[in-house]
Length: 324
Image 1 (cartoon, rainbow, N blue to C red):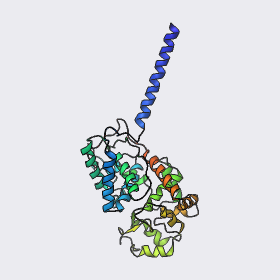
Image 2: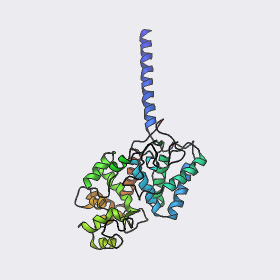
Image 3: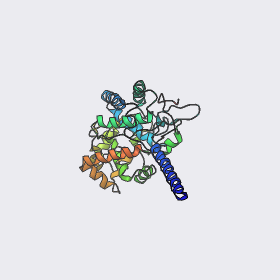
Image 4: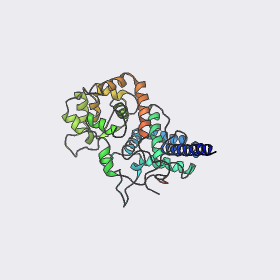
């Protein structure tokens, strides 16, 4: 009898421990079907809004993708980049990597409004941004992937973390590897995600030093860029140039082909193909677009897993620009 009771107690303890572990795992994990019953029209709502925005302005796809990247690199993918400054914290929008360049907030706000009408108080801004980033890539001809969701929104933001965590356009290869490694992304992930520069544009202030001072640059390419980016600081700082000189509005592998002919726009682009450890990855993506597409999709899923708020952490914001 005593032996049976002891066995029963042990079984109960083990069961409770397993349940506790499982609950913790469930709370910490994102899934692709998190909103399948609570907001069944979520994906189609986001997709139609992104299509409309990108059709109106092709650059918007790159801007939304960049918002997601800059969100995830600052304390995880928690929608903190979407928060406006308040009396209690200075947000991330005016941090050096975002000031005068982060854009697309209005598109995310519009999507949030549409989603709130369909299922109020259910879907986080962090998840809307993750889905919109995927849809932006797809609508511009890039790969598709199943976005994992279940994130909750941060109640605060950090300008200091944005200034220190987001890789700068002046980064060396070792700095890039280190920045990505700090958030659990491999060197191959870093090169694949850098391929996001196959779309979008950059401001003159970000590439001025490269086109006037660097030697590992195609001379004709440098001359072309110099026409709209004057040497003097403060002159034409906001003038734009395509990150991919070949097909700026198409998500393809031409970015890597450009690097192999020394036509990377940013210093942090060209260091990926400059006699270093990542040359072979760039060469591989240049020769094999399907390899780039599959690695990019996998790296985006991996990046989306960076420190999400789940369970009872954070909140579901009603408006993306401010806490509830």
